[in-house]
Length: 233
Image 1 (cartoon, rainbow, N blue to C red):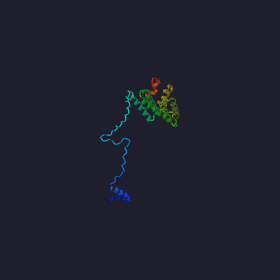
Image 2: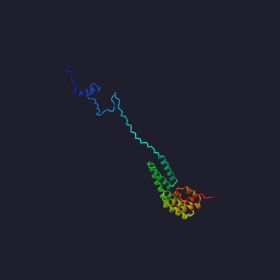
Image 3: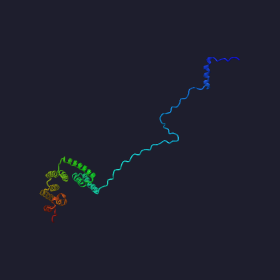
Image 4: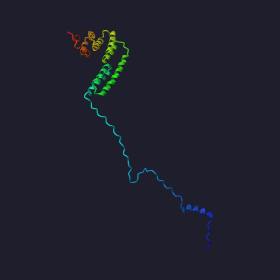
């Protein structure tokens, strides 16, 4: 038999290339394996529902205890409103007296008392501002004197009334205020003297004095009764 001829060496590479092209030779390159993640997968496993954490509801704030008004609460509020009205009408001295009355009579109402004390401070500031003002007329002195009378500053009130009388000696309202100031101080004779002059210049002052608590210390005095008595026609 004739011997088979070996293909020349130079054709081996060529034949290999042709086999690769034709796909007869399997590639030795193996696909890369997928690397599994070390952590837990975020996807839920099939057949199991993901657990949803229940939202925590904020705790409700505790309710403050309900304050039961005392029996005197309505009276304390009414008394405080009296002082507030006087304050808004700029009668600061009377307002101070009203607020002091609230503090003295309604000790069981701390909130009302705190409000009254704050307003007393505001009124006193206004009174001090007035005391630094310049007084040019008799009525300027009179207005300040009335405010001081209401706040219990009797000596200072009398000083202003005396200054007012120097400017207007026959002013019946200033004479009446002088009588009231002296009555509050316990100066019986001075009070009756100024009240008599006030009634002489304006007879209607006798009716006002009869109802005025400033003359309570003279109510039983016969001389006072004679002054305020209605004259016989």
